[in-house]
Length: 146
Image (cartoon, helix red, strand yellow):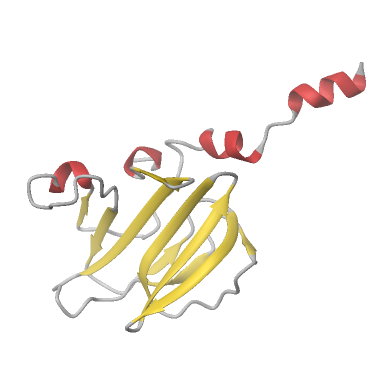
């Protein structure tokens, strides 16, 4: 009886991730505007872009919205991207300062990933947050606790 109860109580990591939908904290302490694909459909040629763009006025610390394993840290022209994985889901945080993290490290929600940087073409600081289930991009906006 005890073992049967345990098997019903166990939830796989993908299901645990899905149960967090609508409960994520914002990855920045303050924002001016938030844009997702619905806001940008008439202005962009990529109708499948599901990036959540969080615009702010300063180089605030960016924190992880969900726990996960760091599966990649990428640098392009001084901007860094941190990609985490939990179950079948990936979260990418783009436009960061160099993170003090290591690939393969498991992080908790709330962990500081770096600071958001200002792109030389923009007047404000913009964090780009990507969410995907495997290779399928999905909108992260519905996962945040507004």
